[in-house]
Length: 334
Ligand code: TXA
Ligand code: MG
Image 1: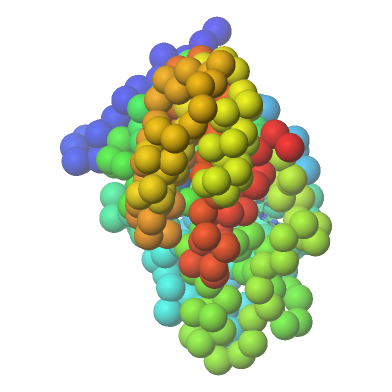
Image 2 (image 1 turned 180 degrees about the vertical axis):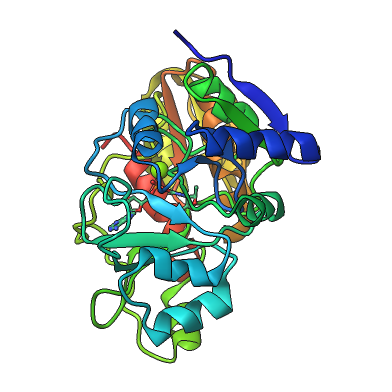
């Protein structure tokens, strides 16, 4: 039988307590974080964690990130905590950094998908952080979307895809960053970024006082770090502005475009007549952080319009845009 999913509000203390009670009872609550909404369950409760895999349709071998409220909780989950982990936690937590450490053998293996490592992060959303601290819980929380789909950045998006399968969503407003955390594997030497995210190798190396190997696309063997991921249902294509205009000129059907350059609309005006009709165009910022904040939300909006395709103008290739490029290239059909 479907659950009736509660829409709780982070500004209301009673609602935050209700979220804590559902989690303590082994239920699922979608929680706001600064990156994307997470689908949380008590990380020490194997049945509760299994419900996350079932609700998402995610294979049980794909490990989940454990979200903690206090630095000392690291020791509950990790077999050992190297100094570099403490330096990075001091510099970036609460914040968009997930650390992979050797798993404490006493810690719930279901969370880690059976691996002997564990992913840990302290999220920066103030209400979620207070929830973790007040309840003393550690919560396992993957992004609150069905397996392989776009990560949600608003409570409304969570409800659109997960309503009826989770206990509640705690609405803390739109996510400030909008892309998933940087994942840093501290079990390798040198430590290596295994998922590009808001924090760069340069920033992390500086705080760690040691060299950190950058993310290398397509060479990572992280379970769940799959080529096709973060996908809208609508086919998505990406190319540079001039090529994109030519492609649209040759396309047909109902299209949506997502662009950032200020010449895109005038480029479109110059198109020879085309079979395609452009039903929607969304313009995002030419500044990487602002673009990232709006990316998933824009794709959600376009995906709801029953378009035949979404055409995305490929953003610049500089380091600032690395995480955006990573997500867009996985969202593409080809
Ligand atoms: O920003 C984020 O990280 C968000 C918010 C909710 O915190 N969470 C998130 O979770 O993106 P998820 O499950 O969608 O992505 C977690 C990624 C997966 O690719 C998983 O394979 C990897 O982290 N991961 C987690 N634990 C791991 C481990 N022990 N070893 C290798 N990879 C791990
Ligand atoms: Mg995810």
